[in-house]
Length: 66
View (cartoon, one colour):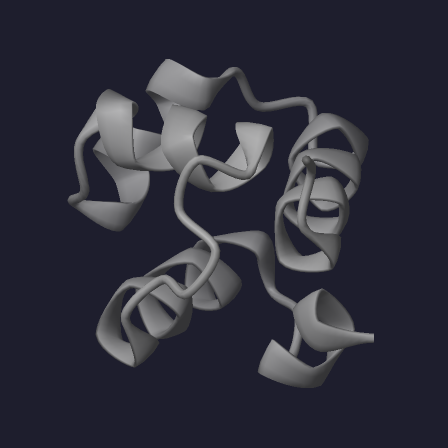
């Protein structure tokens, strides 16, 4: 089951024109991490990971959680 965070992450990533690999590199996380969050395999990603992702995407953490 997809998580809301995963759905929102994918939406903002695509809106930014980034591939999963691009986002992973820019946020200094693994491609596997991005993939797991977007597919819902990780339902509760670490706060530090989310902070890195929102910084790259130039959004707020709340944008991922709503």
